[in-house]
Image 1 (cartoon, rainbow, N blue to C red):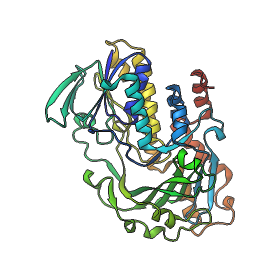
Image 2: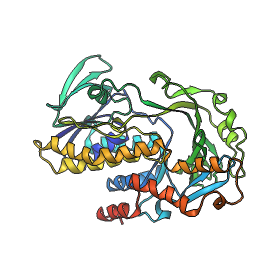
Image 3: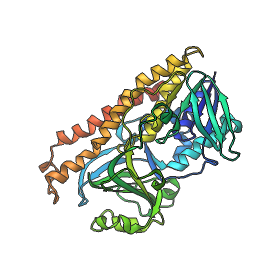
Image 4: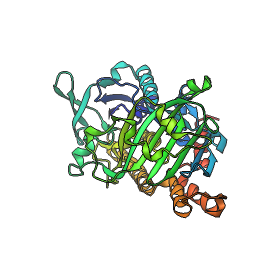
Length: 418
């Protein structure tokens, strides 16, 4: 059985490694001429780390990233609203990691090249079209400008929010759906804050800061490589794709954060410590009625791009890969269309719920509650919201995204990881 994967990102490479572990032949086609460690920080939940650990990657993750100790929510005055332990500190049998996205992708790429062989990953190959009946993909070689057709037993589209395969099946969908908010992302080397492994959200729906450390190497040196995202409401239309990930000046966004100087973090100083600032619109897409068409299906952001809330982008792509491999491994070639359909029936409704929950701000909603009820701050947090209300907000989102401890730990035990 041979599987073609379009896209050499986190989801596509994880899928390739999982398929190889089940004894299947895999070919990955990546449009970039060379995979480089691009991007900034991401956070990967225990539900996905358990799957990477099953691939034997936990030591490498530890060498690169930071085991997230807690998640904290603050108002715009720097007052703590809610915090809770994460990963091992919360009782999971595996950690939660904050890590540089590019370093995680390079780890997966290097592992794929080692385990599958260098011929299994073809770069500079852009998917032009797929045939759901024959499981073929038409590829454009970006160097030569020539096209060719590659055939397999199934094609998995893991080519991101601008997926060419998704566009083939839904040609009238249009651009991603803009939230009315823009993100500015960078990294700064500085002093550790709070526990030194804390993930922080501060502000409210129209102005927010997300920040956390992402480098084990820096932590071992007594400093912190701090990933941060500044978010502001900027009404208008979806910016054109050519304007995504563009470099901008600090003064484009820093002004509204000038007063955000707290005893545990000086936000303007954090911003000034970065050398380069990248701008992104906060976008997603509406859930689709179906991902699977014959022998072709979607995975990760190609199927369910979502707002970067709740640390679920990479996590859900990895969970997609695990669910898909389970279905493919239990099938023969003739049964692959049905296997892809079962995968869709499992994962599409789950991820659709997360897309919609993130539009409602997910667990970050707690900050908006405090902005509306106590815009000038508070003396006691429970004067604004009861402990039960705070716990309900956190618990509800965990149930939606599959973060209940019992399920994750049972998976870890079944894999012999504990």
